[in-house]
Image (cartoon, rainbow, N blue to C red):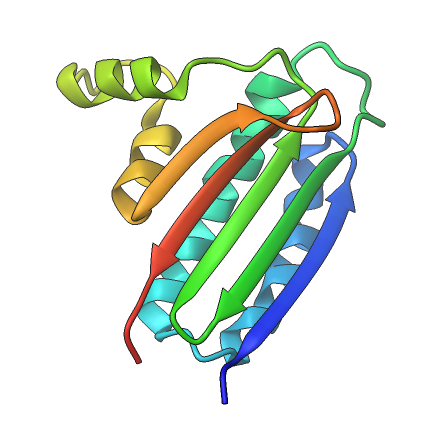
Length: 141
């Protein structure tokens, strides 16, 4: 029998909403995810949500929604964060962040953290005129 659980949450563009996002993500602790993988994915979720608030939605009204979906199977977790910002080229930004190691550099560490956690990390235009950050992390039970 295979395990499958998917859940979604939508918040406003507000850094304080992170508490409710984390409370929502707690439901996946009881899923068949090894605890260290769950902690890594929780950190990636924090970074992704914070980036959506601070960067993707900079200058947008607070009521601009951020949609988050997590889907867990018995072999992987997928986290999708949807924003309504202008978008950017994840590959080129990551290439720069990984090759330039400047500890005084403001920002960008969250993307590097997500990249190091994920088995696959993409950021692409979504169907609803927004963008979707997709983090895929496989695991063995």
